[in-house]
Image (cartoon, rainbow, N blue to C red; front, side):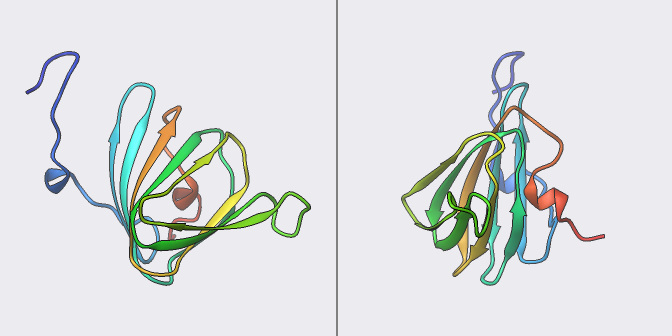
Amino acid sequence: MTTASARVLTWSELETDHPMDLIDRQRIVGDRMMISRVRLHPGFVVPQHQHENEQFVVMLSGKARFHVGDVGGDASEEVMLVGGQVLALASNVPHSCEAIEECLILDLFSPVSQGTGVDAHARA
């Protein structure tokens, strides 16, 4: 189904990119939000970053460690996210991620932007 206001997309038919080592990503970008299906391989690390996007990290399977807030700061905390949990990150909150085991994640971002934290740390 494809109309001016609706479309059906199939993950297996979407292009996969690899902006950093140990990550496979597919994205669907709309007018006001975007969703990424992300597979993180064990050992993947994205350093602390922040962005204006609000972000929901929907952990479908696997286990990853997130640091939320300025590392070493009073408001910093470590969050272990496992399958079935969602991490809701407000706009401009510093955060980082390390995959402890293979993870399958849906990342929802609003507003849309060309870059996310993994794009900021992409391979040269």
